[in-house]
Image (cartoon, rainbow, N blue to C red):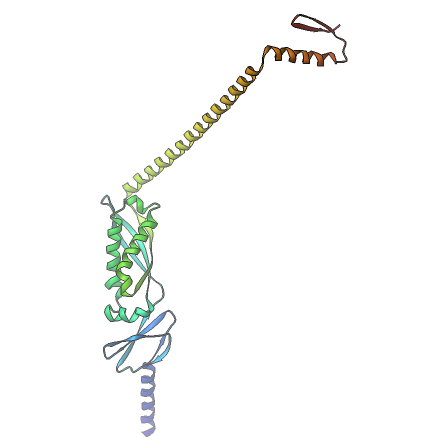
Length: 259
């Protein structure tokens, strides 16, 4: 009987010992609550002992968390756009005690999601629906993130990024956007063709002006005396030919005749 009592006592001691030990892993910190009061100092990662009858250690993740949200975003023209969005955030390590003390462990539903929905609706309402589907998406994401940080930054949260993973426009609006983008591309292509034609016309004009100016310079430089001198030079070169020729000339005219 005595041995049985000892075994029961040892088992109870083991249970108490195990229940008074907690392992805080990397990427998390511990927040100690003793008789309802939050300790201001965080508990770093590692194995920790505590009094389970008076104290509780709450494990708080401080690594990056990915919160997936699906919601309808209002656009400037009054159209709702279905969006799949990821919110990347983390709890600031040294503010974990404030988060648990002031908000609790359900902080995603208590503050992060409400703040996100309000910021997303406010920002998206300033943009057209097509802007969420084109190159303005990054600008919208950045504005939502900054607006969230204005509220959550002092509450112990860091919003790393807001990512609009997919946008689903109303079918009719999507078709009209595609038509408009196609028309814009066609307009840009025609503008390129017209620009190329204008450049070619300018090139031809410059070339014609160059030829005209060259001819003008030549005509202005060809006086009767120069023409006569050039003719004499030409006949002189011809006279050096090994073929027998008879040179007949008179006055201002010269002739070369083969025998």
